Image (cartoon, helix red, strand yellow):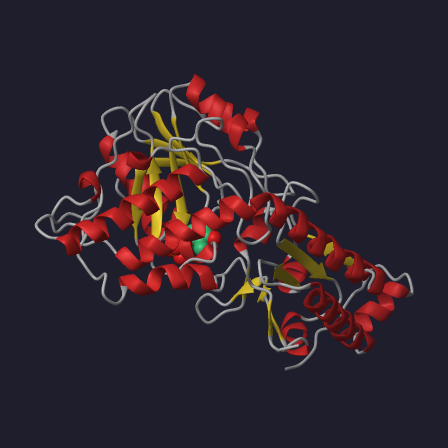
Length: 406
Ligand SMILES: *Cc1c(COP(=O)(O)O)cnc(C)c1O
């Protein structure tokens, strides 16, 4: 087995060989500009782009014309949020979202607030889900957009998209979903779910980095977004710039493969995830699952290990490529804001690990990883007076610690 074992599929995914093969000709002799109307090079590139557009569209139940290619989901989210806030400014300046969203949603929302808009953040429960009744109460006459993610990138929690979409439709409010983690992993249908705008990204679904798309509904209602990048009117004016033809071809094939393999992969990945969780639980006590037990991404397992220290834990499993619950933003070791939002205390947040399982993860890798984690946690706990005290039945919250000198 080759180490380190990659278990960080929510951060990015390896490129599928089949995607790479499809892309290669567009780096070589098929190098045309899809906007060149006067010769075969341009026509060939345009044809490839339109083929990919259809492949993306069919995966989410959309039509080709509703797909706008972007540089990724960050740009797609920016276009959706800022583009709607600007376009519907006269109608109202209120948006609704949640604190567990990706930074690529939270930061544009902050910008919109700085520019005079207002944003309501819905509360989330301990699983990271919003309540539709809370959303209903938050809606105002001046609400123009609800933005809630399909699946959370840290804890894997799924949102009830169809129920949210139905409410938004009934109240005449547009619904955007950052479906970067959900597309190709769970069934998504923009019609059935009442989704008006949807962001997706190539590199989370075994496609290339630097390519993504925004779905923008064309009928019932016709949604309009204010462009954020001007310069030539590509993508029906919504996103200018010469199209990344190889990237788009790769995204198209990635979507096609995801669509064909979705059902089988859901079964396989759910099985691997449950296998990992069962092995961790049989080897260790005092561990906690973050996120929902069943309403979660098949390939996401997020676990907190009590009575160990976060950095030590990461060091103890250096042959696993995983993410920890303390994102090293700036210099400080801040616990994840997502775990914070679902009520995980700082201690447990610091010792949480996200295991991201995906297309190329094998059963042998899962077994090896689980074993590694069990050994690492046990070793740290053997050295931990806290774990020992807890095992002796001492309530650590009641202990009066004497100040230590540093
Ligand atoms: C990765 C990710 C993004 C950012 O996508 P890029 O294509 O890398 O810009 C946005 N939202 C979620 C939920 C993600 O997981």
